[in-house]
Image (tube, rainbow, N blue to C red; front, side, top):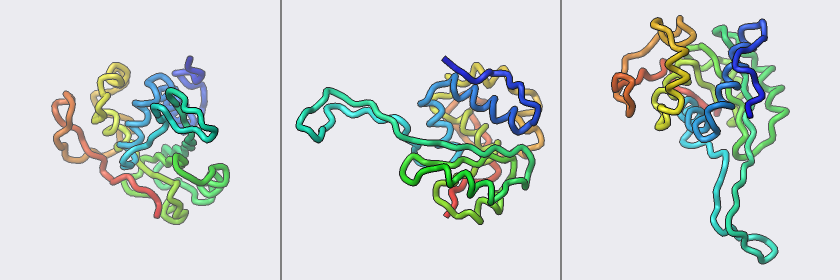
Length: 191
């Protein structure tokens, strides 16, 4: 059962966007969230749950199967261009363990990677913009699962934020007029 209200009561725009994104992620299922975040961030995969048939155990027993998860995703969402703060990202990273499946996703409307992300230079920091997130939703293999929700929220002017410039369209495996607009900037991981 989803615990985040779909319609946020926050007053600050940034908090409303973050809360609404979390509410949608809760409702569309972990595998689709995993796929969308992997596409938006440019990661090959973001494996959140593993399924293992007859895993080897330390004590000599072999269970029939194991379903396990061990990941932590933190998000910093900015709704105004050029407002990412390196010190704030560093503080978030102090709360994030090292290791696989540990990411601080920085989501902004910036067309290029913010300088603060480059300053931090931590491989756990992954930046992408709203255009990349929009493209990931539309170009995901599971686009149909999200389509019902997304169609009702799109406007003739395009996805939020409306001021985000769109790039030339390229072929996409889905019926969004058989094209998907690529993000204006390439999602990046800090080096």
